[in-house]
Image 1 (cartoon, rainbow, N blue to C red):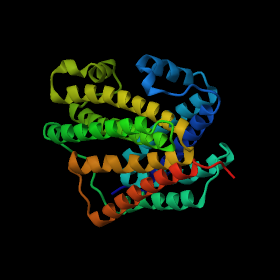
Image 2: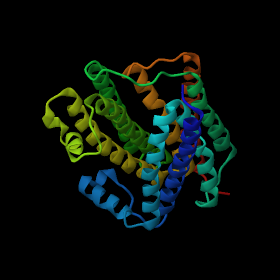
Image 3: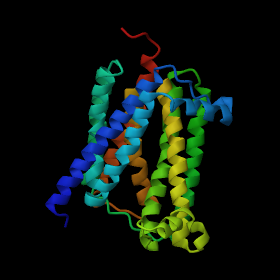
Length: 317
C-alpha cells in the first residue's frame, strides 16, 4: 500500500513534469518559427544532421528542448513513487496547458473540433488508469522473441508512415505522417527504458560508484544477460529518443502545433501499454475500459488528421 505522503509527492512531481513537457513543446514550436532550416529527409543524412544542429543555436528552441529533458526527472521519480497508472492520467492535463499556450504564445486558432477532440483524448488515459493494468515485471530471457516480433512490426509501420509522408510531400498530411513516425520511434526508446529498469534491478548495479557506471556504459563486456541488456537498453534509449525528436520537429514544421501535440500525447500513451501486454505480459482487471480508450485515441488521431488536411486548404479567417 502506497502511503499518503508518497501519493502527494508523486502527484506534485507528475504535475511538474506535465508542465515541463507541455511548455517544452510550445517553446520548440516557437523557435521553429524563427527561420530555422527545414528538416528535409530527402536531402541526405549529412544535410539533415547539419540542419538539426542549427536548432541548438536558437535560444527559444533549446529552452524547449531542455524543458523536455528536465521533465523526465520528476516524471521518473513520480512513476517510482506512485506508478504509471497515477502519473500518466495526470500528464494528460498537458493537453489543456498546450492548447492554451498555443493561443497565447503561438497565435494559433483553436477550433471547436480540436477542443472536443482534446477533451476526448484527455479522457482516454483516465479510462486506461481505471482499467487497472498490472506493473511491469518480466524475465529478460523469455521476453526476447515477442520483443523482436513487435520491433519488426513497428519498424515496418514506421517505414510505411515515413514513405507515406514522402508521397504526401507538400500537403498537410506530410507533417501528420512524420509525427506518427516519430511517435513509433520514440516508443522504442520507452521500451528500452522498461528493459533498462528491469535489467538494472536484476544486475544489482550501484549508481554511487565509478565501477557501477562502468557496468552500465560497458556492460556488454560482462557477458551476462543482465549487464548486456543494461548496456544495450541505455544506448537504445538515447538513439531512439533522439531520432524521435528529429521526426517530431519535422512534424511541427509542417502541421499545427496543437494537432501534432495531441497525436504525440495520445499515441505515446497507447503504444507503450500495447507493448506491455504483448511483450511484458501485463494484464488488466477491466479490459473493456482499455479497449474503449484505444477506440477514442484512434478516432481522435484519425479525426485530427482529416481535420488538418481540410483546414489547411483554406486561409485563416
